[in-house]
Length: 206
Image (tube, rainbow, N blue to C red; front, side):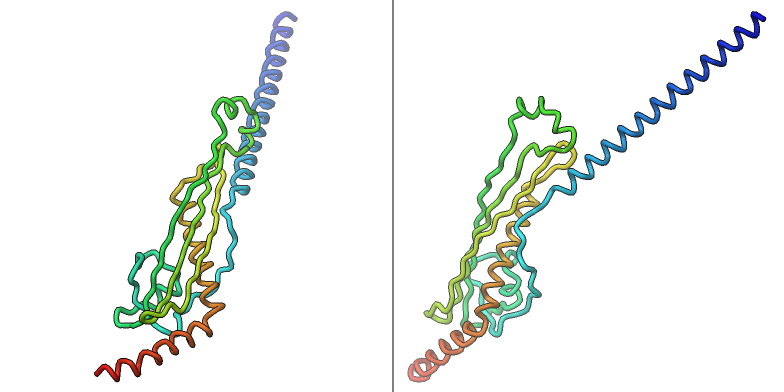
């Protein structure tokens, strides 16, 4: 009888231990799934702005020579219309300003919301761009644009200045392209007219 009682207690202990292990395992799995869910959710909330219509890029109806600016950092329409032998000239300039925000460590360290992906800060960049198109001594067009890009970060996902800078540059170049394309017909006539006006003067000089 005593052996039977001991065996019963032994098996009961195993059952309780197994149940506890199962509960701990299920709880741990649930916490892991919850943690992953928060991480995924926080990642989905990280957005780079602004939204600029992505128009299919195409060359302008004339060629131009770049006299100011980097050939590798131009609006697509301008980059596709370059020629070193054209009397038309392009002057392009970009500037970036940063407006980052970071939650103070003394506050973020005590905030339990950080565990579910609350933002710890924001990296912001404003890109300014200007494009001038001239034919000889005649300025036929001046375009300016300003676009802001930003991205938040948290303990699960980081943000870098490089990616936000690139987003702001891409956005402001697309905005310049939009302005050029909406003004394309007038611009082509202005360039042609400027060239026609210069032709008699050149002939007389010869």
